Image (cartoon, rainbow, N blue to C red; front, side, top):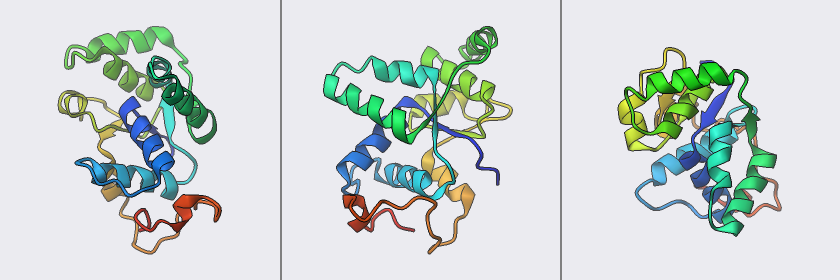
Length: 176
């Protein structure tokens, strides 16, 4: 399976930052998604990507400390894809809005198509309900679904391992 360019929506980005920043094993109702997302970050070669709309959404976070945390993580740990053809993305967004009322979701998927992402990860039930399977070339799915598709053998060494000085290195919940 080609794992070239995998994108995350704003929700996934925030949850991944929370998991990295908190270090404790997730235990809420989205725990399996958060664990899969962090494993994807560690086990996939390269990095995960965000689109311009995701960056713009993060810039609107009202809590200054949280907004700064997002800025710092985006700048260091994630790839950012800039819009190449605004007119075609705007047109595609309008087409996607016929299936889903979330304009930003539609724009993120249109940007993912324009950037030729292989997959776009989301936890957003409405986003997935209305637009999963709509894109001809971007696999919109949950992190757990993408993790399962990769079929990584247990015991496989991750592509990225937290440094020994990082508290995540002592955690075992993320290891496969």
